[in-house]
Image (cartoon, rainbow, N blue to C red):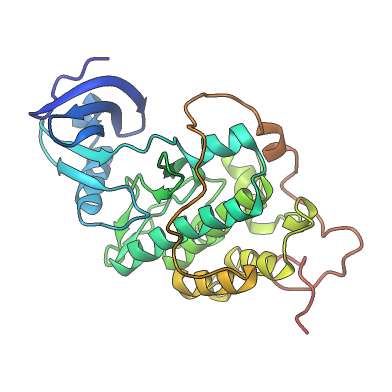
Length: 319
């Protein structure tokens, strides 16, 4: 598909993919080199809600600058010449990495979770909610750094709305029930992402929106240590708190979650300067998919473990 408009000094190379609001092209700039060029889909002219989403993404992304957020180089939010230029992350998405490799080494899991957490913490510090934190919206550089991207559903904290957006696998229970998105609902989605990265499987599954909604509202996922017995109990406890169904029992901020996670994992809270390289995830293979989809939406506690009421029932009472 050839775009009808390309910003001056850019040349499209190939189509990378298309989303709800835009098509993304691999492009070259005469000074910046290789970039990702987002152009709004033609039908946005007749779909004002999607048009506003693209405009919001451009405005929000241009105002964010952090090592763990996909960098925006240039953009214009409105009109027939609307566009957004982003850094090109050659490592693909975190979702692709999990599909290809399944369960990752724990050290790598910790790096990825903390990278995403730092990006989200910065976004919140700038007054921006993401509202769709998930592995498909996390992009990897060829050096292995994870960066949170795709702020198409993002809003400013001051723009309170009960609009129900996001992806059902990662959506907070209160959002399903009609409450507005919040820092705590982003933290819930981050907790789901952390569970998936650590275990290689999603905690809640379903083949419809309604099934997933009921799973988030009443389902009981397996203890992540069922899949990773070597995982520290304290790390599982941090993930459980982030995934608490009661928003008031989650962490108050992502920074608080980062502090708890690094303490539980026994790692340096400072960002790593040399992340483990990742393979380029450009193939659409299904390796590892079975490890992410074999558990049901409702699961009991791990056999032989004494359940504790609160969180998801699979933590021992702290001593």
